[in-house]
Amino acid sequence: MSFSSEVKAELAKQTDSKRHCRIAELAALTEFGADSGPALEKKELLQKTLFGGTPQGAAAEGPSGAAAQAAARELSAGEGLTQRSCCKRAYLRGAFLAAGSISDPKKSYHFELVCQKPAQAAHLRELYRAFELDAKVVRRKKYYIVYLKEGAQIVDALNVMGAYVALMNLENVRILKEMRGSVNRIVNCETANIGKVVGAACRQTEDIRLIEHAVGLEALAPALREIALLRLEYPDSPLAELGERCDPPIGKSGVNHRLRKLAQIAEKLR
Image 1 (tube, rainbow, N blue to C red):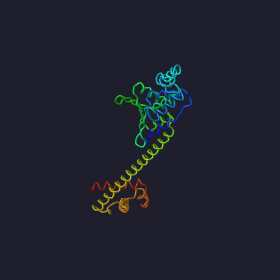
Image 2: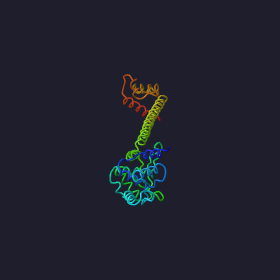
Image 3: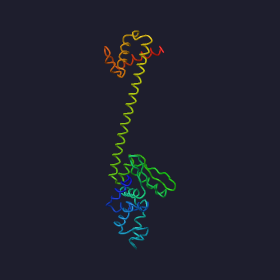
Image 4: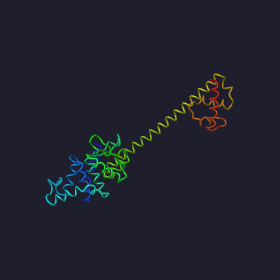
């Protein structure tokens, strides 16, 4: 089962206790065309619990007479159905069940709902923004797509709709991906630092060998000769370790100063 299917299966099991919330969810399911799967099952369940039948416009297959007209009025109240925060959540849940999809978070973060009309997309965008979710709208052929691309925003959208199990699963994936990213950044940084150290040590050894062959290390001042011999003996040692081997010991900056002097001498000899 895809992650999107798991989310819808979870949402289909959510049932609001308040009638106005169930009306809002059923209105969204009806408006966005719940015609198969969990969306259709949820639509039929809500129709049965709310009206005892299947209202279609004037409720052709459901209740008749005054009851049918009342059902039609309740389902056609437009944006008035989503005045309450709880009803906004229910409406978004129904809309996602009917027209939504979400990508596998292990691969990418993408959450969208497909709308037939621009007014539908604008309404959904405003509902998401009521929960501080920065939903965007883009036209794709003859459809209008309301979408979220950031992992944190998708987590919040799942929370708004009540998909708490899916939310936790997505959060686990996000945490694992962030940990892997952090480890990779640390490893890359360490590798780069090691590369710099090794490269510097190789250049220092080359400079010392050049001086040794050109004029001999005996021609150097005692302090420079000492650090030159230590670098040749310990080519992989960091500067701090070389400083500890000096007599008397010196700090890392002192070692670096002496090696720069050797580099300058080698440059002149070149």
